[in-house]
Length: 307
Image 1 (cartoon, rainbow, N blue to C red):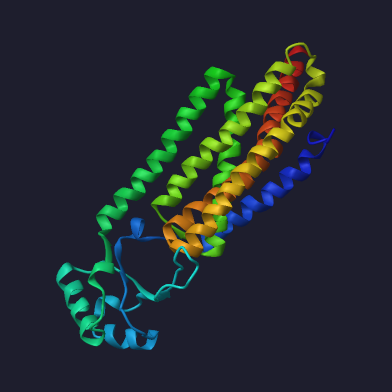
Image 2 (tube, rainbow, N blue to C red; image 1 turned 120 degrees about the horizontal axis):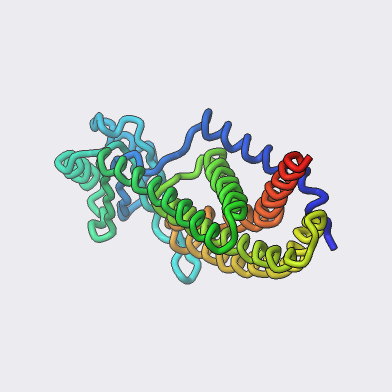
C-alpha cells in the first residue's frame, strides 16, 4: 500500500511551487486573452493563391486600425491527410464594418481569387467582451457556491472546504500554464474550466465517500491510516478513469489540430487535458490530506479545551 499521507508534505511543497509559479506568471506575464474578452476583429481568409506575409503587410499598411495586428498563415489537412490551401488570419482591434469592407476590397484587388464563400469574420466590441468576462466570472462563482452547498449537505463542511481548496489549486495551475505558454484564453477555455470543475469534484467525492464509510468504526487516532487506505482503495479506479478520458482527449487534440485546424477547439482540449492531470493529482494529494489536516486541527482544539 502506497503511503500517500506520509508524503503529504512533499505533495504540499510541489503544489505550493506550482501555485506560486502560476500566480507569478499571471501577475507579471499576464494572460493572452482572446477576442471574446478583449473585443476586436478576426478575419479568416482564403486568398485562393500563393501569398507571403510581406505582401499582406504591404496591403494592410494604409489601415491605421491594423497597426500592431497579428497576421498569421494557417494550414490544415483534409480527411485524407493532405495539406489544404494556406489560409490567412488577421487579429486586430475592433474594426468598423465600413473599414472592413475597404480592407476586403484592397485584398481582392491584390488577390482576385479571394474566396468569399470561405470567408469568416468575427467581431466583438469592447462592451460585449467586458460582459463575457463578467458572465464567465459569475459562472465560476456560482459553480463554487453550489458545490460547497452540495458537499456540505452530502458530507460536512470540512469536506467542502477541502474540495474548494483542491479546485482553486487546479484552476490557478491550469491558468498559470496557459499564461506561461501564452496560449489564448477564450470562451471555450471557460467551458473547459467548468468541465474540469465537475471532473475533479467527481473524483474527489468518490474518495471522500470511501473515507466516510471507513471512519465509522475507527478511532480518531486512526484517521490518517483510514484516509491513506481510502485513497489506495480508489487508486486503480482514479487512474483508469483518467487514462480512458485522456485517450479520448488526445484523439480529439490530434483531430482538431491535424485535420480541422481550429484554435478554439485546440484550446478547449488542451485545458481539459491539463485539468484531468491536475485534477487527478489534487484529488489524491491535496483534497484528502487537506480534509485530514482540518480534522487534526479540530482534534487539537478539542484537547486544548478539555485540558
